[in-house]
Amino acid sequence: MTVTPPRALALALEPFAGQVYFAPECHRGYHALGFNPSPGKAGEVEMPDGTAYFCSRGSLLGQVPGEVIAAAFAVFNPAVVIPAVTHGWGLTDAKAVCRVRTDGAVAQLHRVLGADPDGVDRVVALLRRATDPLPLAGKPLFAGLVALGLPGEPLADAWRLADQLREYRGDVHINVWSTAGFDGTEIGLITELYWGMPLRSYIRTRAWSDDDLAAAEDRLAARGLIRDGAFTDAGRAVREAIEVATDNACAPIVDALGDDLGELIDLIGGWSRRLQAAGGYPASGPHDLAAAADHWQRPTG
Figure 1 (tube, helix red, strand yellow):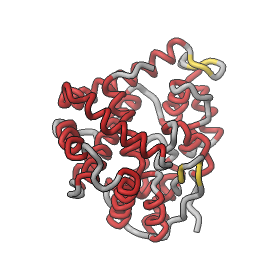
Figure 2 (cartoon, rainbow, N blue to C red):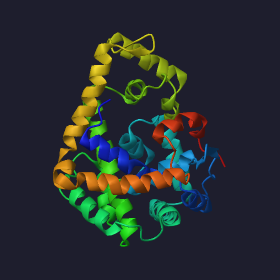
Figure 3 (cartoon, helix red, strand yellow):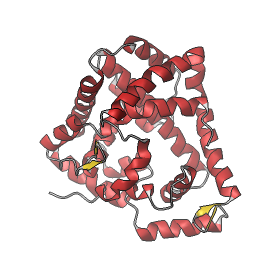
Figure 4 (tube, rainbow, N blue to C red):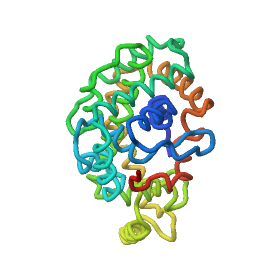
């Protein structure tokens, strides 16, 4: 897997933007709204309750039904997402969840990084430059974040802008792989191989059944993309082409940053490493979530 400039930026941003899903402050806020508490830790990181995750991230879209959230997330089993969101909207509403999401994420950033970490104003300026040229068309989660506006405090603004870039790349990625003829199970399986993971490991966090995954493996094998649980040459090339196309669609970000890309990667990358060291995000990135497959359950309580 080649680390291109767009991928290098995405990797640097990920723990800083994605810490919202592991912040104890968020989990406590969701629990106060009626959601289940965090189901526990994976290593040093507090994992999210599944229903709270779907509703909090989905709140970026507004008060929408589970079908819309399942469509926007794309890789999760709608049979789990839809009833989870229905349950969650019976507890509270999108505005309340979104407010708790923002407050909890910013509280963790203040706790770990301090309220005014070195370089925060420069990071905000660079992230504004990176997000300004990006189109909304076909980018639902990115558009939802843009519509929210910025919280109005430098570190919170930096996090919101980083979250915009994270969701922009995610929206683009869905556009690319769905256009290439893959569904959520198939892209999940070939992404595991792309990351160097065994089949049916990380994708279990997306709530698919064994039957779903077995059928997807059969389809991938019939297309000549996997064989005996491993990539064929054709499969590896197809998965890399998906990432290249994602990079190409994210080129406006890199172009807008120009020679300042490295500075932004260094600044945010440093914050990301501090968050990981403090248990605010998995130490080895999202791959660690494979150990938490049983956290995505139907709502209870």
